[in-house]
Length: 425
Image 1 (tube, rainbow, N blue to C red):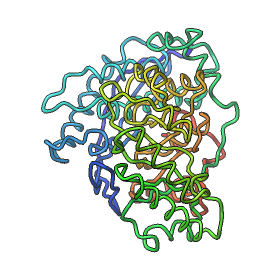
Image 2: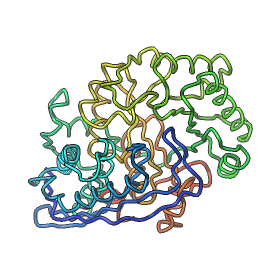
Image 3: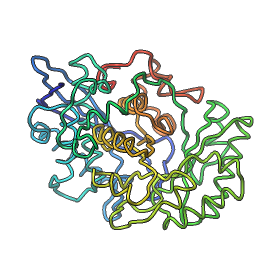
Image 4: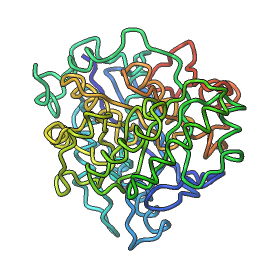
């Protein structure tokens, strides 16, 4: 069994401006901090250093109107700095990297933080580059991709009890593809204010994008349905009648399941082609699915409805099943280990998973693509840094242009799968 020990860690921060605002229900993201973590691990007589990265998307993960972006960003940076200093204590005794990652996930959710109270989602986000770096380091030490850590027995007491056979490692091994896929449709985010010729056509006509993530308001089913049909028809015309893929995301602004059902039924009544192109909807309502519990079965009978921001701990897995969610919109920014556990848990129950984005650039985009290469998802992987923060990919270009700056509507992983989680690329 693979057993690793965290020896030390550090983190640095990079400012990344957006070339166009990413508008979500809580506001417009125009700039962001990238946190890059470095972790040194020991595996027996071997040591290696790994890296991981994530955007500290405070407006998405912690949209507290009482604090400014600068204030939230400062608190999240301090949390990352504290995690770097305390990482050996947070991960504890030597263990499999999955267990180390889950210990870190649990530790950060309960960590006292001076100056504010970040949400569980924001805390998990801050821990995620360290989890990725642990896996990257262990893989480099062993000369293995981190997705190959499950061929031998795994002990992960933090999460073994979640699975029918009492072994998370076996469940993950059953989930993972034996042969990774290396190509994924490229998804374009289309907002409610985007101009088709200026903001959409260059990607559809010029770069052959055919998959659209549509931001909808959530509070007006009729207007959202009209917008969905309008976007579908416009993109299809730009693409010369090619098949279009759609997903819809209101970022939690939909009042409840009835409004989601009305939206879907109105799309179907307006345009069957647009309805058939719509593959799933992301978390329509608020993030706290304990305080804001709904029955999603009527929605799921029409289209898959995936829990996203409300999935921050293992308790939410069974709660989501009870409430009738179709599955989960996973994000590596909640932690590599937690994402793997969630995907394996969903697979045991026949639930769907998608892999969404946090505008992942560079290291985090490679990580997400590797995850999707091995974990079956219904959307491949969403990678939109090329759309919003292309400069953040510069140090990997042109050698990884096929993955990070696609020109033909398709992301492509390198032929050779790297050791770790791609930090060596």
